[in-house]
Length: 221
Image 1: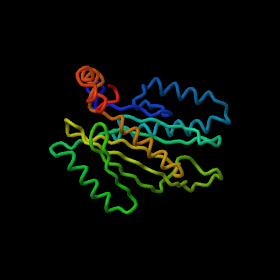
Image 2: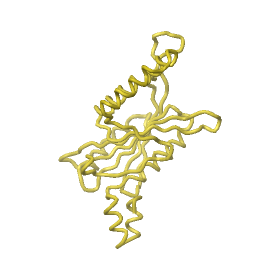
Image 3: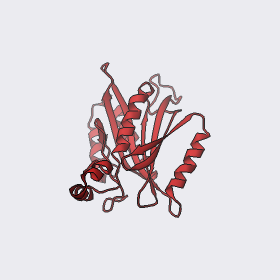
Image 4: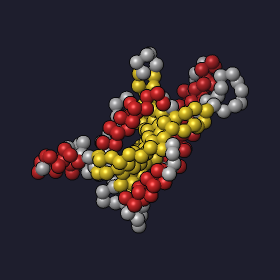
């Protein structure tokens, strides 16, 4: 997907803030200046966050992520729940993308820790893959030791073959809030339901001729 000729469209769920994956050098310089201007007791923590942000951007771009948003939601007890959603696509040039997904399903089905579920979405058929795994957590231990922090995360992924191309759209949600998996699964499924391969302008055109088709296929209709 490119800015001038996107292959698909989607909506960002409520409570998620889109992340600029291609900030200008001026933007980075401004953030660095803001960090340096903070009081000394806040500067080290802010510098860690800034470095983590820069590293995350590098990693997302290396993985060709095309959209990313940070979610912050109240937990009902005065705290905040956090999660990250990303959107990317992979090319299945020369191969039927449905066959590629079928291979992924077979591979995932052989992994006991993964759960697979077929989905009938407004834009077509997709598959939900979900798993819990242990990974390294960002930050440093509060006791000052060098031992790396670890934690359990839930990762949900929806894979959908494009309608008129060899692309496979990957929509993913990751969170460390494993006690709220059911809620985050619903967020991911709702996110996937916004996916469409019909541009907003075309959807409006179709809605004039066949309202039922436009409403069924596109959230922009």
